[in-house]
Length: 181
Image (cartoon, rainbow, N blue to C red; front, side):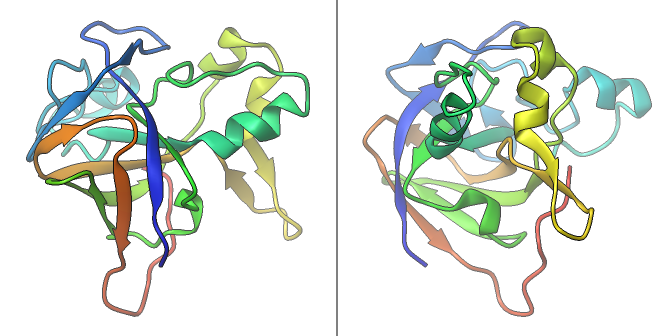
């Protein structure tokens, strides 16, 4: 499978929908992005904490493809890296087509294991009215299609910076398609 490139990295130590862009972020094995509000062994997303705060955090790192921003721009929306709360913005790798368990090698040391799809929520419409409909749709069979990126857990820590290469290492077959996490 071909790789891509990290275009932008973002993090925020407080809860907010968007995340400011950074010169670099540090991924911590088993935790997530150093200093990010969503880092931790157990769930940190408010809706998940309300359900069960002891759940494992399968959403330590949020990756989104810059190609999505190009697509929504065609529908009149202006979305920039970090605007949808992602930690890593990529280009040149089809994140949504990766199977569960794919290892993404980011830069020299960091490795993120893909756990599933981000489940877009109504906060996206709060950011820009109508945007949720652009990142959540249905396929020809009526099945929900989530386009707002993928989630993962940090297997090996390290620095990640814009310009870093991404290499995808697929898991053993049979591959399991991504589901929402």
